[in-house]
Length: 256
Image (cartoon, rainbow, N blue to C red; front, side, top):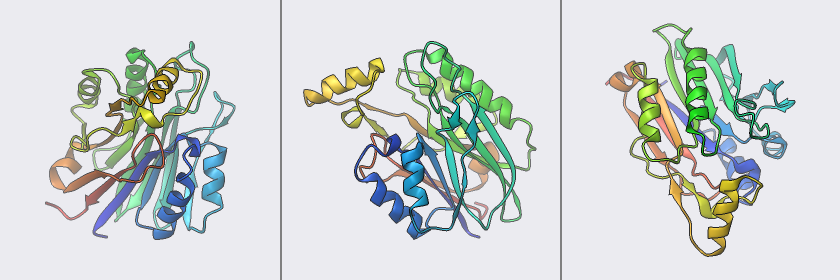
């Protein structure tokens, strides 16, 4: 195997009409070895189950949420799933109603070695301390795996405040580094759905006036060894299928 191709996307619960055709096309192409999804609710999972594809699905039940979590991994069945990791963030902020925030990971056999692949969705909102707490929970969850394991975890980190990305980068050091530094903004508030959350209401108000805000919320992290020894390319896809852009990551398994 020459490359590992990964796609990460906050699906916005299939709110945009283009999501279904986009997802069907992605699944049919089999271009990606792993699909890392966030806000994968029942509608999203119904679209996936209704498509003709051969991917296996990792989508655990979240006891704190009382339903399947919103984070999900689709993977090609050629990869052997050796272990499952799941941490719920549904109740890390008691002031907000429970939603499917969390971290789901799988330890897979890839090209003869171990690779830990994870889908991340941190809390939205103005409390940066909550997201920092969730970062610490992720690090604790994956810290038990050996130095010979490759890591890639990605998703919606909901980073919207000045300096927040820098803070998270430092929290992941020295073990993990962000490989998606050059992809630019990924969230466009013009396309955010209406909801009871304050930020959504603000975004909807400005969108009605033709004003939108763009943020760098979606990120990809890999272990330092992989970053130093393999070529990694990241880019956003142009398809408007969510208020987030889909991010494509390709890791060349051949050594640099």
